[in-house]
Image (spheres, rainbow, N blue to C red):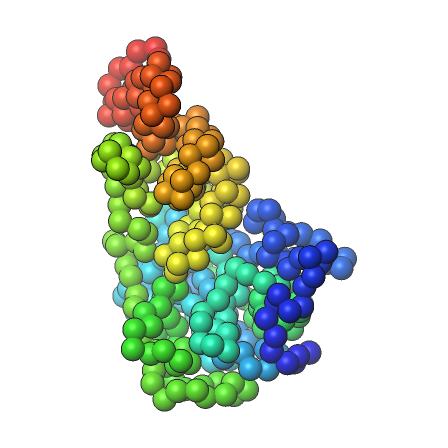
Length: 368
């Protein structure tokens, strides 16, 4: 079970691609007769919920410097000692003691997602790559067990086994202990801590200590989401040099209605990957979310492709999102159409965007 450390590309041939390349959505794939999920997703709806996570067993690859679970919330937030967080990483030392966090919904379709995260032997935090995946098991005691394979080495779902339990939060809750020191925000600040192990309370048993310095973690509230600089829907045509807005801009009314369930989870996790500098992984997630009908994902993917110089692909994704009534995609598409001389269609999309804005403002609109 506890294989020597090896990167996934040393274990997979061209005819046997890693698990990460086989996922096409948040739905599971079949692998050796089992259903393997890229992430675990559960809806908690209107109810403030206590999520308990406990380490059941672990057999990480030898040489791995840390592993745990990445927790994200869509349509709500994690209430951790008064902080409202969109996502946290819960490392195995915290899981070994048992960790309970409060999930608070901000709408009726709140969901949480879990996926494995790990720190490779060079000290780089990883996720969403290699042979990672989750097997889901219902246990006799009513909990759910997540058997998780990290992305390094061959698939091994005994790398990390975590028990989950959920319960409605009481009206008044008194925390029994401080847990923030062993749980970090999903976007970790590593300035000045190169080579350190991401366990503020020390190195867990089974991992080799590599530095005495503690990793600094930053936590962001829901008042300041971990997105790229925001842009208004009107901003895609803001400059001649770069006629597209920034990623993570303000969504339209239609887009907000689509940001639930798997497609919302895929989009938000793509934003997290982009924030970590993992652009290709973000684009893959945004493509999946856009194909599932998330307008903002298609727009953001188009922005990246436009800045890479792939105008044909950018136009395709902006057109997809424009049809889903994303105002920013309409503006970006109109700009591209003007550039190649399709002025009539460009005017149509600008008129349609103006009508959408008027509709959101409650004004009467005319035909396109």
